[in-house]
Length: 139
Image (cartoon, rainbow, N blue to C red; front, side):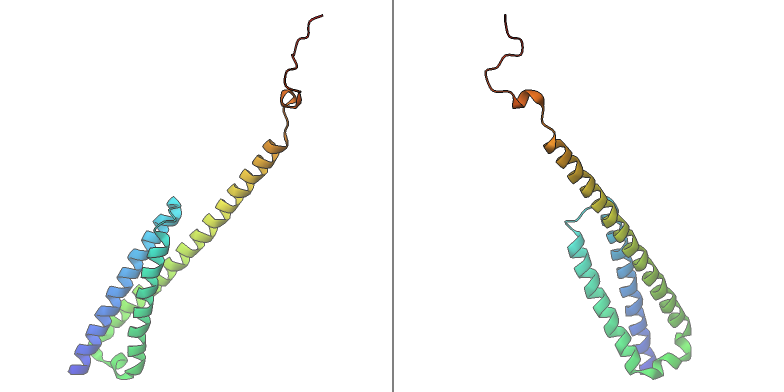
């Protein structure tokens, strides 16, 4: 009975961590979409801490193989596995979105640099003229 209670608590903790990671993924997605880089690093650190905590819970499950065969936990195990797969898929989507946004930003920067080079190489004819020269000379 004590094993089942600790296994149930561990599964509930795992589901809570997965839910928090899902929230962080949505925050990251919004930050990437809006190109807000100021809070991005903080959210990534928080998500990494949650992933480390999830790894500790998974290691606890690996150390107790009896928990996997507890009959009362089958529903929670399926729910946790489904949620973990969902979070993993969403994490992959956010990563792909970030890669695409990075490519878009790089293309925009390259385009801006090219335009600046074109503007800086263009010389207006009157800026080359000596100061004091008049456009319309008399006589």
